[in-house]
Length: 348
Image (cartoon, one colour):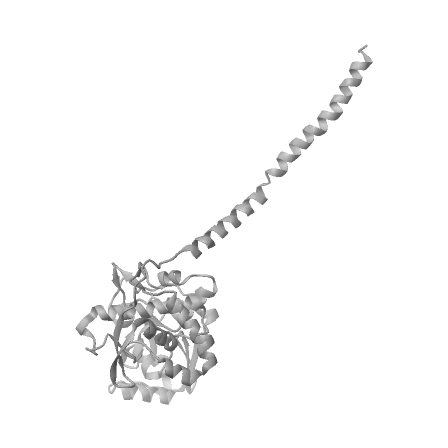
């Protein structure tokens, strides 16, 4: 028989050691909890990514902004303007001040780049004594400070115009380049879900003006869908006035009209109306549609034409940019998305 004292000592030692070992094992198993660690890693990565975005800056040069000649088509004369002040007038004319700041900044950079692109064209401009004009049909919309103040009032100038000035100031000197040259920054209101290849709309290809997805327009733009209802007779009359040789039976339009081809972005490229093959852009012009992306529903005496998007569809969609901004994208990410293969350069 073993010594009772030894047995008692062994029991005491075990009663102390076992809880200690158990606590050590339990502690190890709690510290290494895979689910909690994975969550922490994911959250940390997201925070790091957001921090990296905030740290991105293209402001490397701090020089005085240049003065440019602008032909004011309303006044019929050329005016000298500081380019940054001119851009505030362009931004106020081309985009609503209610848009997000990052969308406004993207528009400011696009507008500035347009000026530099035009300057590079030299004598090819229609207004030889000016780099750009104030007519949106030829260059960019421009509204002077006095025009804006008179139309919108002091409160708008204080709250909204200051936001426009901020967008211009925070992108001072930034332009978009391809092969170190300013690009042709085409832009428009609303896409139909994709932008267009430039060559399919304007018959000239640019490597940075390619069709890209633009998914946010549908959710954010009030101009995403529009419709036109027109009688068979009015439809036929409009095309007969535009195309003298067109022959079409207004009582059988379902068989007289056929969409032949669509662009990569979804717009009608070619459509047959009676005996004539017509471009979709011409149909848009004749019927005054918001875009060339349309479908036709045939009824007994009239047509329902459903249109997606607003504008020519090439380059940056302004409402698409607004959607990207709302989703947390920065202005340089917006520009990189819509103008493929480009870089931002700081000129001054």
